[in-house]
Amino acid sequence: MIRHLVLFKLNAGVSQDDPRVPAAVAAFEKVGQTVSELREWQIGWNFTDRDIAYDFGINSLVEDRDALQAYLTHPDHQAAAALWREFATWVIADFEV
Image (cartoon, rainbow, N blue to C red):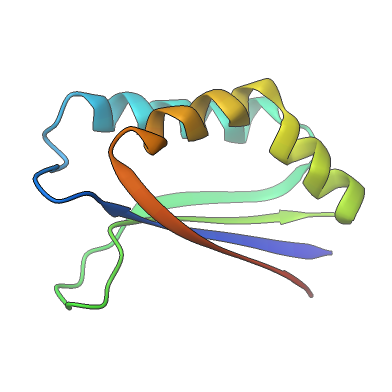
């Protein structure tokens, strides 16, 4: 199994109230419903107020590297990631569990 973690940081001047943000969150909610390779799918907003904290996170689990690749290239994932690219940066970690 592979754990796929993504942490998003909203760009300077962008808040959760920006109309692009809820649309992008909804796009990732859709990913959790349409990508069959996902064994687990959790998304949510950070609630702590620390300088090093990121704003939004995805915690997912897939079976293997082929499933990860299928997830990454899925059209719904590609569409959601494109929305986030407009107003956020992110870091990713993929590791075997």
